[in-house]
Length: 165
Image (tube, rainbow, N blue to C red):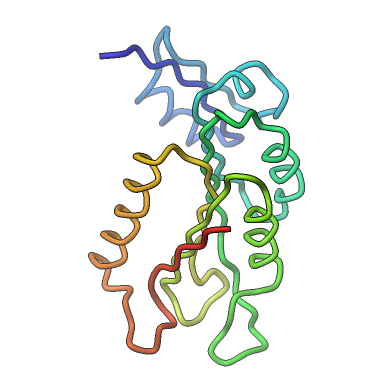
């Protein structure tokens, strides 16, 4: 029954048009540009979801996570890129480092979902600091998606792994 105010950013016109069609209205702010970590709509948010265009944004995201208020719920989606030098391809060092650095921050956890044995992107990782009910719901949703998509595999290459500090 609560009114929700959303601030949404994207740099591309197509996604911005979709956001405006779905969420346009007086309670929401939609911007066609990158979000800036220190702007009031970001700093004052109860929940921040970050879906960067690539993992090269990680240094800026990491700095935001370090400075975010402890009560702010945060969810970051990052790709898990492949190291093509191994067979089958393993996770590349930069993907793993993003997760390890996040887990070193107070209150952050992570989940990695691997859905492919090859290709450039072999999965995704979610880095988050959430209240307990949201944490439980997120992990349950991840397991449901993995099961529904049949990403479980006897070789343990595919599926979901949850990391706690």
